Length: 187
Image 1: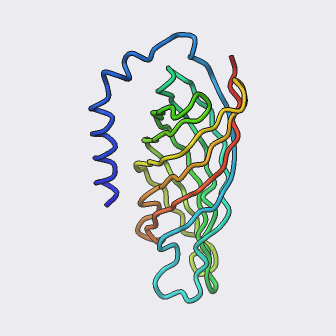
Image 2: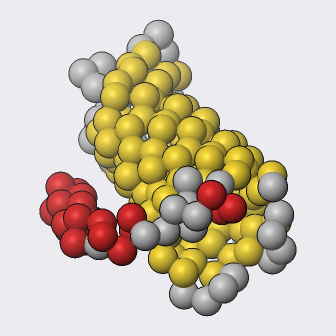
């Protein structure tokens, strides 16, 4: 399912490359930073034998980006994925990512954006899973809305997923995060 969504997003971008190429005004190039938090959901999160699994938790992140044009931006981010825990076990994670954003203005101050990038995740076990650590690379993608209050201050509402976090000794999970972020543009 994830590959179908990714393929559709790439196809949509490919059909609009000509329009995007026209949006390269140097005046829109600038750095920005931000941070926020939200709710992470781990699926499955806990091994199948663990009863009463709580697979939702708080997630926080910080990011920095460079606006290439009014449409394209590149970002790097650090995200704490939160944790999943059950009876006598816990799995928690974090990761770094680099991604590209493509935004479509709806109004002068609101835009819809899509994200596509790579992440490197690290998860650690606790309780029955203590001593186990997994790290892996994968594709991350998401969609969201950005509202610019001023030329410097903005806010985002975003859904993002990190598929396949985990590995052989810890549960292979998809971490999905819904977050709200604030960002500051340097002009």
